[in-house]
Length: 123
Length: 92
Picture 1 (tube, rainbow over the protein chains, first blue to last red):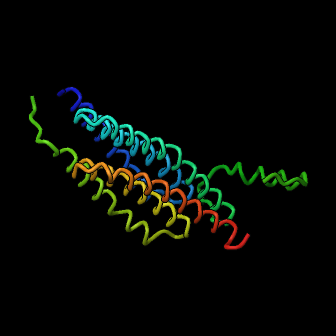
Picture 2 (cartoon, rainbow over the protein chains, first blue to last red; picture 1 turned 30 degrees about the vertical axis):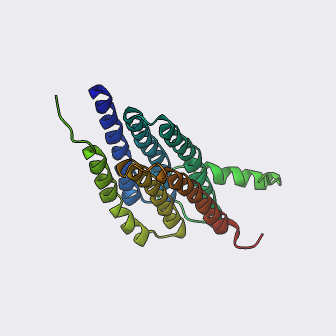
Picture 3 (spheres, each protein chain N blue to C red; picture 1 turned 90 degrees about the horizontal axis):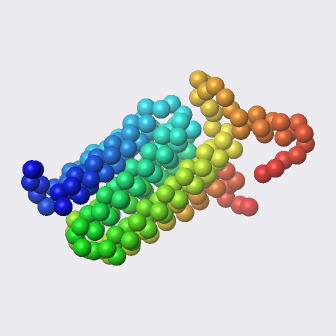
């Protein structure tokens, strides 16, 4: 019983750490793309860790079906957050949001340029 | 052997999440482009989902979990709609 409580505290602490890392990244990083890099991965991992901790808490409280519902929420967050971030990054690039001056490579732009040279436009 | 009161860790978690979501308001105010603001909106939605899930444990009502599920799904739909609008405009 007590060991499970320690596991739950560890999961909560890790999830809170990743959420705080998300906020620090969004405040400190210079660019939309860098902020997306910070937010998508850290938010996904932190949310899933906290939801796993809550599911363990529900299981020790004796409600297994509710824990299954929580795991469903965790799976949905794991699928949905990277897709939304990908769509945001794509739309920001297509809209012409400038890259940070210190960026070293832009592979998507180079690929589009080479496609333009060949004359084919795969969407 | 540490004796922990019943729901203390959840309260600490909620306070930590709320305090850590305060600087996001500053990012929402500052964000130079609209894409930054949409990004902060997405993070707010995920944090709201988490807070609803914790609230369902604290108040012992599992009906809040359905609202958390819907909030995750509608957050995704909203972010994709904003991204599509920013990319292609209102028509098409």
